[in-house]
Each structure stands twice: as C-alpha cells, then as structure tokens.
Amino acid sequence: MEIKKTSLFKLHQDNNAKFVEFAGYHMPIQYPYGIVEEHKFTRSHSGIFDVSHMGQLFIYGNNDLIMDLEKIFPLNLRDLKINHSKYSFLMNDEAGIYDDLIITKIEKGFLIILNAACKDNDFKILSKLLNNKYRMVLDEKRSLIAIQGPKSVQILNEIISEVKNLNFMSGKWFIYKEEKIYITRSGYTGEDGFEVSISNELAEAFTKELIGKGAKLIGLGARDTLRLEAGLCLYGHELDKDKTPVEANLKWAISKERMQKGNFIGSDIIIKQLNDGVNKIRVGIRPEGRLIAREKTKIFNQSDLQIGEITSGTFGPSVNGPVAMGYVEKEFSKKNTKVFLEVRGKKHPANICGLPFYKKSYVKGVNK
Image (cartoon, rainbow, N blue to C red; front, side, top):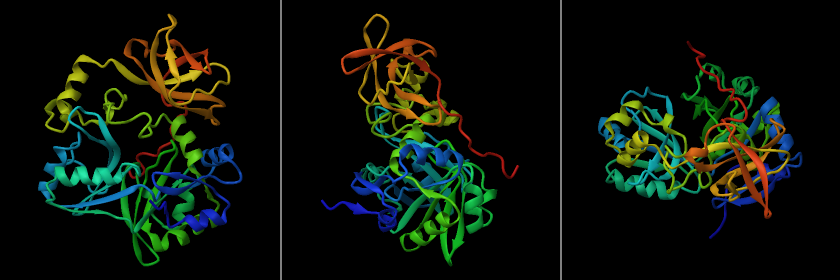
C-alpha cells in the first residue's frame, strides 16, 4: 500500500525533515535542530505541528443526531454550546477504548477529530452505530495544523485577527484568503495553542506565514515528549480497546449526568468501575537518576512482584529528567510509592508520582 503524504510534505522536505512512516503517512519525526531543541522552542516560543494525518470527521444532523451520539459517547451533548469542544472516547461494550477524540459542536452538526491510525475504523463503527442516518464526511481535502506555545496567540492573531478571543476548548470559523478555516484553541503539548483546519491548497501558504512570523516547524518526536510531560495519553500506548477510561484515570472526561444515568456504550462497566474501583490504573512514574524506561518495561514492587508495565517513557527536557507513564495495580498507585523498573535485566528504583510532570499553560476565561 502506498504511503500517503500530507499537503505539507514538500515544505517538510525543504526544511530537511527526517521522516518516518506513521499511521500510513510520511511524517516528520524531527528537523536538523533536534528533538530537545524543538521541544524547548515550543515551550518558550511557538511550534508548528503538521497533524493532517488525523481524521476530520464532519457529521451533519439535527436533534436526533444529538440523541444518537449521546447513546455512543459518555457526554452531555445537548448542553454543549455551539463552537465548544469536549474530549471523549469511542468505546466498545466492555468500555474498552477504540479511540480517544475531540468532539466540537458546530452549526448543523459536529466535527470530531480522530487519531490517524484509528480514523478509518472509527468511521465504519460510527456509520454502523448511527445506521447511516446522517451525512458523514471524513474530509481528506482539509489539512490540520497545530501551533503551540506561549507566543502562538500573538503570531496567529497577526494572520487571523480575533483568534486571541477564543477560550480554551472553543472554536470558530474564520476567513483566510477568502476561504473558511476552522480554528479551535486546543492542542496536545500542555501549552496554549490552536488547531487550524484549512484546505489542502492553502495549508502551505498559511504555514509559511506562521514561519515568517517566528514560529518553527516541529516534528512528531518533540510532540511525543511534550505530551508525555503534560501527562497526556497516546492511543496505542496509554489507551487501547482493552483499557477503560476509568482505568486510564480519565473519569473527569465523562459527564457527571451520564455517570449516573448511563445509557451509552460501555456504561454498565464504567458505572461498576466507578462504584467498585478498578484493579489497575494509569500513573505517572519518575525513575531515579537518568534511566529512561521505555514502553513494555516491567514494574515491580519492593517484594519483587510484577505490578504493572510502562506504556510511555522518555527524557523530559522541561523537567530535566526521565518521565514515564504506565499502569500499576491500584494498591501501588499512591504518590511516592517506591517501585522498581526492569531495564536490560537490572531493576532500577523509581517513584509513583502525580500527573502532569509539567504544569499545563492552557488559557481559560479570555472573554469572561
């Protein structure tokens, strides 16, 4: 099968990107200045991320659509305001996660941002669950560009005035070169930032304008270190079809009303876990010293019994040390619990800690 290219592929080439195949796409993993510098630049200034491989699913319908989607997602969509977004999950009957996603209420329907590796399967699942009653468009004609970091609002506002008025997890249609683009104030780095849905034809010109105003292209390598420092989950690592939102320590994303009433896919399991607790749970882990514990590293307790496994681990440039996330048995999930990580046959000390490792800098209440 041919590997796909995003509309910014040539721009990445021109900027000497190193590419990897990711979710069936040629994607930039890093640029010549390297992952650590890209990471630091995003935290201190403004980074541009090509996330056009992700799915942009538009579903159009009326009040029936809202009721039908509420039978699928654990959200109160009736009270979600137009142009506001929520984080959620597409789950199976056992409350395992097919995908995590961002759903935004737009006029005449919803825009759902799906993970790249999951988007085609998500489309099939949702089409079936909705009985093909609604117009659904997985729009391949639009690119998705994220601009993240403390200078992002200033840079983007010079190109699209009024974006500074958006609140976190809200969006709006704007005009760029006589075309409609949709911008949400959101992201995946722990920084203030925006995600811009724009036609493939305009994506390169738009990105070049961002670069001209001081932002830099950043690869998937730094995107991963940034999200890990911010304690954010990556599908296929922290989340998969065998883990539930409660086990993933994401129950905050389930509407309180839905916790009580249920009536969504997987709700029986979710409510049972909320009432009875879970056997395993996602935690933050700080290895002692400079050890980096990668995915699949086994976690042991002080009695040398395996109690879990690392799902993501890296060096955190902003915290100047190694960071990791993983699942452990619930009884070992308290902060400051001493654990041991098995790397290359040796066990190394580490401590369970709270998340995030790096304090998020989201902007709220701009208009209030």
